[in-house]
Length: 374
Image 1 (tube, rainbow, N blue to C red):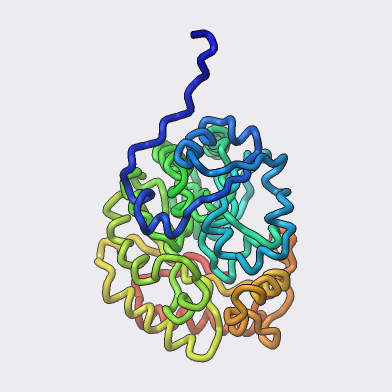
Image 2 (cartoon, one colour; image 1 turned 120 degrees about the vertical axis):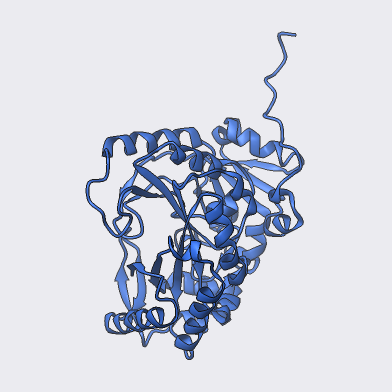
């Protein structure tokens, strides 16, 4: 009896959206790369209990997996890798960075990468030729770090564009928390943590409607930001995401479940007909959203940012996207906050576009205030 081993956490009952056919189409894991410490952690063991027959390759670092990140042959398998590959790691550097734009703070995120394949996503720019989900299994350390940081801030003394009363922490900078929740309980743990923090709220953007999040009881302490764009843009650029109409339709359910629901008008891609199509989208928002959503909603406007390296990767798997994303005549080089060299619309073009979008909002959705435009 003294040779018995501690059992791995039991796999949960086969219930909920994460076990649905739709969820399996999004994420059908067939290979796992994992750091040994991640495999040994309670969260890692919970994840693998749900994937009992999936082969595991141990790696020294989730950042250095030559068969993924250094293999240019993966470009042709861009979406397949996202569907079938999962990486488990531990987040070694726990730091909260000031932001002041969308959120007051950028918290250490529970993941990096995504099963979706938006052609404009900035995360692959640092990862090379593949960008599947990397889940960080030391969620207890992440939550403890956030608790300490929130306590150190004390109450918020002055309102700002992030929130009038609460410190806002972005918990999904490099991933999509709604998709992460298909695999593990990291998102649930973070929602639960902020539920007990009266001076702070979590925030994350998503392009995926995951009904399982409706049962997490956020009590107003988590802001979910549904990213929306015109249907024509989404069909070309938002690969493997929930349809925009479904994201909009889900807003009321999430408000009723205790979330604060905002909208990201993101990214705004300038191409022939963009003003007409944005007017149509804003009219749709106004037509279908009930008053209880409109009364608490706000928007972020984010103009397209692109990158030479991502442009070259996209040419290998989705060249049609680059017809609208790569516009050298309208774009200029810009160094981002994290030091990356990107291209954005020139200052004059960007200012004119934001001004025009404000006009469209005042005409078609005057209730939707712009909290942040970039």
